[in-house]
Length: 221
Image (cartoon, rainbow, N blue to C red; front, side, top):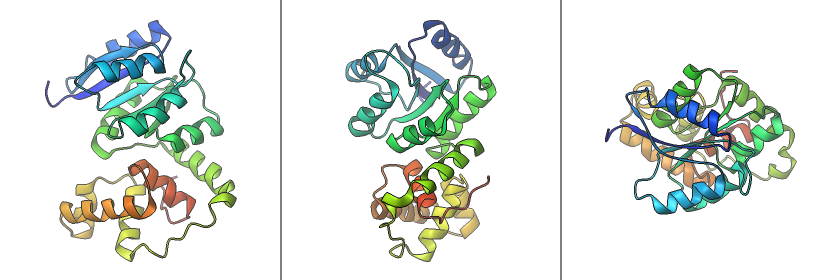
């Protein structure tokens, strides 16, 4: 399955983790690379396995090294790996904190199997996926704590870059943005890379947070 989405599962609840593994392995386009029981175990696996996962589905509360701290390490050491938080915590502070340290999606453990699979596919396709609830939480939490971010300037973004950033916030893919703006996908990628550099965002999810922070995002919420 060379074209399959390669997944690592990280959760200290063995029965829950095995259930998710069993569920995902039924999907033709998903391959479980390895499982880990905590963040430290995950880091060891990433160092040992030659093939790296595309996406890590990770719990937050785990012994030894929790999901938040593990996410910080992975964002620095393996920036191309995308992290989906799958947790029982649904408070605004947990969601906002996990997004700000680098998670590209946030799911609650009572989510449906369909939603989990959809989220994995969307993250694989677009680089991130935020539900309406998560988008609203980011907006409420980040805008309300904006006092330490008020020095951000958006004047250095061109009108075209702002337009593309707004479409990214609507969770459009590169090809969808290209079609809508009558541009080539390569041109859209160029603008997106410029946005990452200009805003000092680490990934597409970071662009969304930046856009919300600076009140230039258009959101379907």
